[in-house]
Image 1 (cartoon, helix red, strand yellow):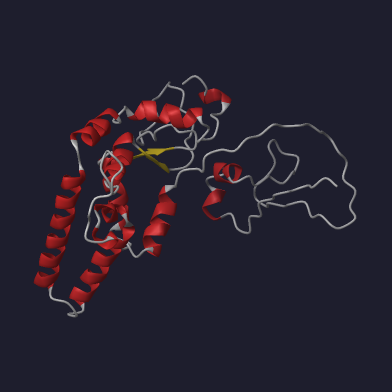
Image 2: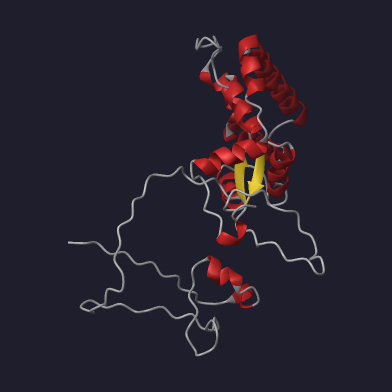
Length: 255
């Protein structure tokens, strides 16, 4: 027997969407027909289906689909993960995200893979540009390359003789280190730990990781890293070619 699937968006309260109606279109909420052009969003009503209802078939078609890469994290999803891993506070999380963008480790893009435009007032007589939806954090070649350098091993694939996995340079890219530092700061504030001791201990730990990372880098790996630093635009075109983003609407095609 064929399997049918239906998804509907139910809006209990408009809130700010009462002034920003395009948000309702973005989430797929259909307007309630009321005879006006485009319908009314004042009350969102969904079709109620019951067992035994007979539905007419208006269209039937076959579509060929394939797997797609998982979508990139959005900014709010990263902040949720930071909160889950106890990284940052409500006041500092936005700064952490801003730092990785400013350092060009990631680029903020909309759902079509187009870098977000800075907010600017409309220019009189100029056609407004299409509204951008989503704030996706897309890794740049620089960000991916740096993470690759943190891997254990040299250019021949041989593991370096680190003291243990907990002390390897690969840990520099893990959220556990930042979470541990946040916890130590909280303990300093409650007088459970001594500030100077914590600072000296962390400086020694990071210096040791830096030395181990430096020892693991060969000229070959450094050259490979430099060759991987392609322009961000080229990288975005690659992600688009493997359908990592949504297709651009007709008015954006060719731009």
